[in-house]
Image (cartoon, rainbow, N blue to C red; front, top):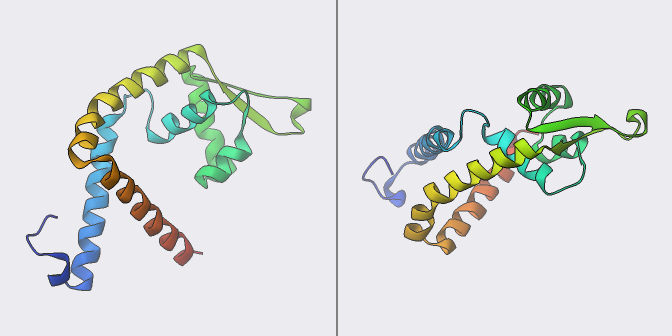
Length: 150
């Protein structure tokens, strides 16, 4: 924590501000984990695409809760960068889908090698159980924020 206070000694607003500050730092620092080619969202989409024959935009939109119009711009940039193919079948009646290109897989492998190198120390130092606990706590926070914003 940025302050020396323990959580029980902090006021509600101090605890909230500390949580926001930590989220900001994590977001800012995580941005440095990614190459200039792929941002965090593009990496995540490419990773999903690498695991499927066809990844429909509707599935991506639902998974990341991104409006289709905004997602189409992201997918267009990824296509232009050459990391995916964006196409359709049945005259587009089933929707459009993406597939990872060999170049995309190469970029994905480079990014994952960097992540393994960068996060190995974090996972070894903090421990897998605490990382898993952190992920679950973060999911709970996200669920609460999403429910409050409906």
